[in-house]
Image (cartoon, rainbow, N blue to C red; front, side, top):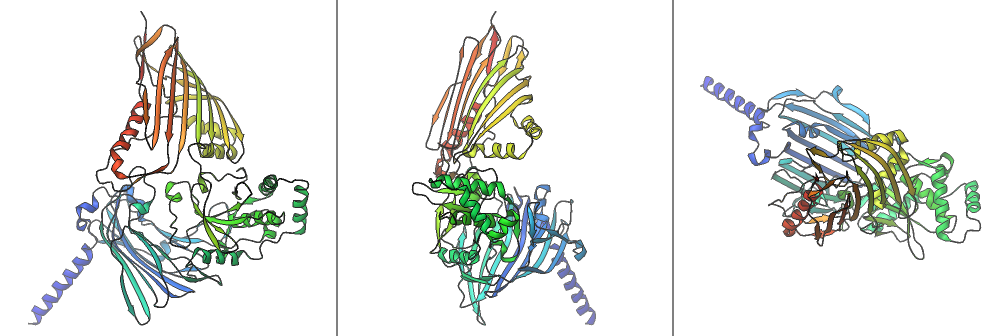
Length: 638
């Protein structure tokens, strides 16, 4: 009897051990989860516990199977902390493909690094970083992390699907809070309502997701929340760094920001006198703004300073005047102070900055909360409004560009705050006009003079490059960036026009080696030299999201090829004229004497178009892709 009991006990131990070993075995991943996936989240439990408005704790356990090298970015653990947040504990385990433990994390293996870059003078943001650095795919990493914060200004969101080609077997998020406290949230692509329970004066809400197949973002998708399950959370009353606020309304956010800014606009007398001297005799308010903005750019530089609540509170104007530097908050506050002493009202405006369409479309207007990472200044006028990017030493007054333009922002005013739109740059502003004079040699080489004018967002990258890099580095960039096989940049020149709608004129002298293909008495060439669409798009039978085009622009190209004497067109490319509600494309080519005249016009319109239009939209871009690569065949006359 004893032997039987002992044998049964040992068998149970073996079963338990096998179950523990098998829990992260790759064989346990459903097939539809691993297809088209680089990584699979096997399990996740995130618990956010609010004790009161001053203190919160987060517990996060997750396991991710890395299927191949493309998924390795998900293997790294990164935990941010600062003076308001501390890391209580971190545990980690590495498993092989069979789910067997290979290694346990040791505290000495965790790196403690600064979370700032070279533009930061003083910042207390740091991060705990660890990676098992395993390359024996597939493998699984598991981490358990606990942090606590002396603030309730920011609540962690739930984003179980962390990116494209990332599947989820199971993920859960729970938020625990005093039952008399108001939690606000906004769910995307989550069916049903969260589970809710109350016990011992605390309420818990829980969300859970199971078996989410990998996602590949389709062409012209505006935001991740259009595709994946995401839940954003926001506090009602909160505290941070000794300051209290209420996020129930945008006015509450504005009043909180005002409390942080209060009394920080006092300028040294010397600066006030300098301002009065600069604008003496100037009657036009717009000119005064330009003069003071130029003064800001010449006398300050951007350096990030993030210390505790300083992540939201600007340094005093006197500090910036004395030291000549500041972050976006400090520089905006300083510029606002310069205008104030000149009798010009302006408004501190918070925004989520970034150049991607996802950044431009991430604002959730009906969930007042911290959705911002940058500050700009709005100066209203009698006829129009001037927007100022105070961190830039090059941007002209009134221009926001692709970093902060074309999106919603929150303007902080005397009553609280107002949701506003930053300047929008559309088809009539974002232009690229190019004219090329090209001469084709009998050996297939091409010499060309390229003159291009870039306007507004089309000039952002070029303008930033030429103002940040020396000529040699600019030439190195040009030597790699043109869509040509082998070529030399012989000369280049740039002329910059600074205004609320800036432009850059580019002049290039280029020699293209072996441009044309020569076979016997025939020459094959592609007349579209520098402006070919870069990617093909295919239809997705499962597509449910709208097509969203945020960036409207116009490209025009006029190319005049001088071809060798005695050649005529044997086979030409087709003229095309495509006109739709989402774009326009017109191409023509002709032979005049010994010159080929090629013209191309591409217009992309902004807007939202239903998924039901997929067939015609994809065909439109496929036709453009094909036309941009069409060839002309020249033949020598007998």
